[in-house]
Image (cartoon, rainbow, N blue to C red; front, side):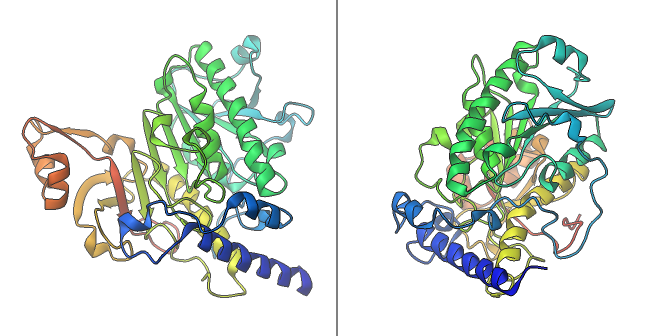
Length: 403
């Protein structure tokens, strides 16, 4: 059990981090969805802030892979990583392939014979899952989603382990994320060289891993990968960086984002074609209260980690998390998110562009609210995209969906 002194220091650090993040990201109280998800000018200079707080132990507050961030225990993932497949003398970034048909396999960059010997199946979708700060593919963030994919279908699930580059303080890990992004870019180019189609690649990144995914995708040449899913992309240090260093809609043909701890550990503004804000995107039901001095760390850990738990549930339950499109609304009140849709968080097939000339029923639903009707024009020959920001509610305990 942690000593009293250590516990006190962690609590004080948690309060300081929460306070700093509040003043960095907020300049005035926000009352509606659009303003609460928009960038505001930071009160503090992050470059000066770095010098002041670089000695703090940020690992307590960001990507937490030490277990399930819920308040109740859940079953441990069924398949663990065989340690022999993570080469202790190998490169700082390693890519481990998991399939239904064989043992985990360490894919080597630019090694054709190695690739041929693996169980990689060109006919199956390829999912590359990227952890964040102070984590690895041994942790829940990877295991829970890898298991969800392999227990529900045939996939090439690749765990990107860059733990060597993000195991110390946060600002060093930000630099490590750039290095990891370069490695990912080289790996993606190699997969394409081996015959994997751009349209077959889906990157899934949590926290800092979302920005790693973006930087790697930016380095792909000759085309654009199909999809990136950002799971509560890291916020501290990324408000003012160029787009080339963080997740944005230009990184893939489809970018969808789940926000669960915005304006504390993650960015609040929309970063994808579709941005989902479960329960308002900041605090999740079932997580400890941030205001309670004894549960600050647990609260941040739980809210930030809930994004990858929600996403794992979308893999297993295609009908989970039906969402409401939001425009000029208060995120704390679902009554203002009045645009009913057929969009389900995490389900790409529901993100379709509606052809108004052939689908009048969905088009009528899409154009019903006056505010959005003006934005997309009236449904004549124009197509309507479901791209935008979305609100949904969840349960406090798994299964999180009400469906």
